[in-house]
Amino acid sequence: MHIALFGATGGTGREVVAQALTQGHRIKALVRDPTRVPAQDGLTLIPGDVLDATATRQCITGTEAVICVLGSKPKQPPIEARGTAVIVEAMQASAVRRLIAVTSMGAGDSRRQLNPLFRWIMDLSLKAIMQAKAEQEQLIRASGLDWTIVRPGGLTDGPRTGTYRHGLDKSIKGGRISRADVAEFVLAQLDDRHYWQKTPAVT
Ligand SMILES: NC(=O)c1ccc[n+]([C@@H]2O[C@H](COP(=O)([O-])OP(=O)(O)OC[C@H]3O[C@@H](n4cnc5c(N)ncnc54)[C@H](OP(=O)(O)O)[C@@H]3O)[C@@H](O)[C@H]2O)c1
Image (tube, rainbow, N blue to C red; front, top):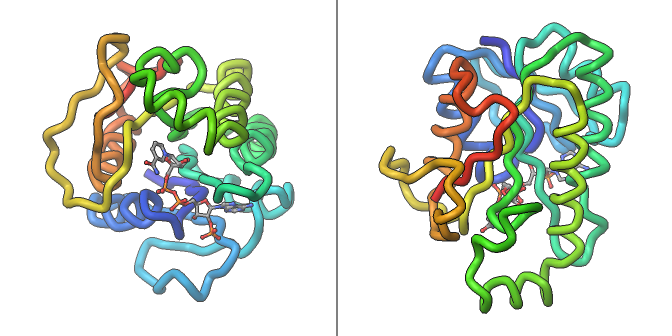
């Protein structure tokens, strides 16, 4: 499949690139600094910021699915909702319908799936980012696209194991999962309709 990727220089994004290319997919990735990504067969880099509507549209045009693993640094204005608004508009204009976006366990109606102590820590340190993720999820739900929102628990840089839990059951609590396993789960959604218009947790 031909995939447009946002967040390719991040921890999860790098895993998505590596696994997708191994699986024979082609990727167009929008990156702010192309020197940070080694050239590889099947990978086309579009230099730019997701807030640049022209660059974002260029990245999406001609692809069959969009994967969004954008993330923000604390103390900077969160990118999730603002960037997703540009992506959704570009998808609607380009008639690309499939969107898989990684948000977080704790976003939107999954807030109660976090234990109270962790919820308190998130409220203290990540309030703006979690608000942006909730807005991002609302934008995606209202987009009319064929979306899946993936909500991982705490991310690690551990290896790909293939042994993680995923589902819609609210009894799934925030555990940990490697970025490599999140990437595997995200890529598995490309040709699986089970979680269309749904928000699975993965831990
Ligand atoms: N950390 C956790 O435990 C945890 C838990 C659950 C969910 N999550 C979420 O999971 C997702 C993936 O996490 P991660 O740690 O793999 O992400 P990450 O390493 O922080 O990567 C974020 C990516 O977003 C890109 N980005 C940010 N602003 C951009 C902009 N204006 N234009 C274009 N690209 C931009 C970054 O590009 P640059 O390299 O140019 O900055 C980078 O490629 C994030 O949404 C994160 O919040 C994290």
